[in-house]
Length: 416
Ligand SMILES: Cc1cc2nc3c(=O)[nH]c(=O)nc-3n(C[C@H](O)[C@H](O)[C@H](O)COP(=O)(O)OP(=O)(O)OC[C@H]3O[C@@H](n4cnc5c(N)ncnc54)[C@H](O)[C@@H]3O)c2cc1C
Image (cartoon, rainbow, N blue to C red; front, side, top):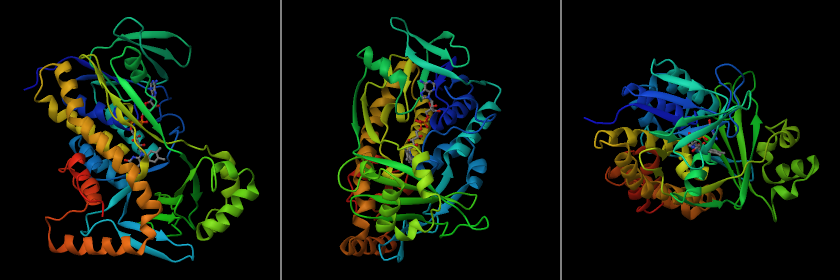
């Protein structure tokens, strides 16, 4: 039995924070959640970035632990492989796994986040405070400082047992760095992203909805994930500067010509291309490596706040949900918050470093290798081997379908 007691504060009601609120409350803790955004149950969702995400086995395991699969799976769409769209308009499906259940699931970030918040808020021992921007730890005391976004009022709460899930730009992490408890290395990617819409026809998808579509073009790529309303969200990943870059796409004519040249089949499906291009933000990406995830038993960083990664393995949320599940498992083994937080970092950091590396490697695989006939041949051979020998599991499958295999072990496997 764990000797951990009392209340827990959570900073950030994003994907990890809201799942964690459910898990902790179901263990009997009184949970107080502070979130800078407005309550998504009331107003229009402000997801900020990436409209949909791929949910895989590690994320599913975290949701299952919270008893939420029954609510979440109906809002997802299974994707059984990558549909690779070549320049000449032909497309070829490359299956993700060799078994029918080896699929990943497209889900709307905003809908998933709202469902998690609804589930947490329905528990009697969870309270949410929206519109509260955390400014980090107060300068000289172990208290958290907040600004109420409605009236500008500054208020504080004791930091004891706070879990900071305030995302890749974490204010709490900044204050751990300022106190020299943590050190951080941020590695921005040289490529940015932009999201565009592929509308449905009569509410139906215009391409196979059970696939993740990719238009790989070597140095850059376009992908598209299905949404429940018959649309796809397409995302262009492209260098910020240089040849074939965002910098070069200055006006509607440049954008249209670029898509017509590089992605003619997708261009035909995005009627709002040139208007959306200038309305939608150009998002940046990068990896955040942090050492020192906790301040005694007072504060722990979790999810993107501790280890943001690039999205090319579709694992950031999955890894954050795995963090939540692992923290719950480790609670049974630790009697103090400080002991738990320290053990959590020791256990998780090698794994989050491993997925950070695999996520970067997967960008090359997605935008380039999938076009290579040699790669395709090796992939086919690996599939055959996997069918014949259940003991042989390729790296991609280990990461996506085998949560019992740690990321560090998956990294030790050849990627082909
Ligand atoms: C383009 C793109 C595509 C992606 N695709 C995938 C995918 O397919 N699969 C996958 O698993 N992952 C994917 N990810 C990664 C995934 O989005 C993140 O890993 C995940 O959101 C991390 O969850 P989190 O709760 O740690 O952080 P977040 O979801 O970012 O939540 C942080 C929360 O904290 C709040 N907050 C921030 N600062 C403060 C503050 N100072 N005070 C109070 N509240 C604050 C925010 O408003 C937010 O609600 C993708 C990311 C991007 C950018």
